[in-house]
Length: 261
Ligand SMILES: [Zn+2]
Image 1: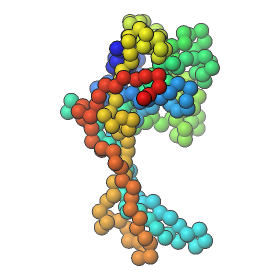
Image 2: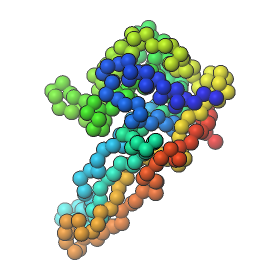
Image 3: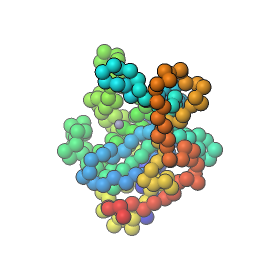
Image 4: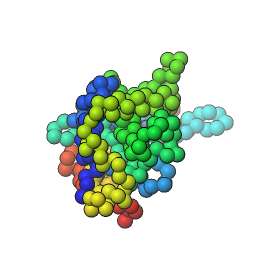
């Protein structure tokens, strides 16, 4: 069977070694994992998750009375933390997930990026997605790249036209280095072709599948919280039921099917 996430990882290594503008990426600092995503259903084909962000400033959720504006209820004071994923003793900074089989069946035809790849083969849509996720990794390694608007301010959405254009430029740069076609050959096949050709598609997932590491809220000791009027009722904070620390022991290889059973 083809290990799809392993193939993507190998291709990513090749890309970052050939494209100078992505050379700040250390392939050992990221983990590629698979999520289930049905073809034709809404949802991303891939996502870049930054897990090296520091906790945010402490805060709390609160409820106000609409007329007086008075705070009536609040949660305990808390911070939002990144989960920790440690592989081979190293704490990773990024996870990149791919939705299978949806990603495998991605094509240029009818997509927003078709205009950027005139005459290119359909599978380049998948190469574009892979480069797109890598491009989200900030060169300062401080999270997800902030996209500058023309006026120099950070754009609220990180997927402006400029982002897509830059990704296409990097894809062309990579292809111009004449990489070994064997490294990206697996992208030429859709999901059912992969099944026929390799006898099945597997990918790395977390044992908690379909759940995976995500940022979580953690309550802080009450003495750290600011003083609130006695009338404000403190509601319990919804705490995560997911693990917050993961190692290689929390990973497993899972087979993906057209329809998950
Ligand atoms: Zn994106």
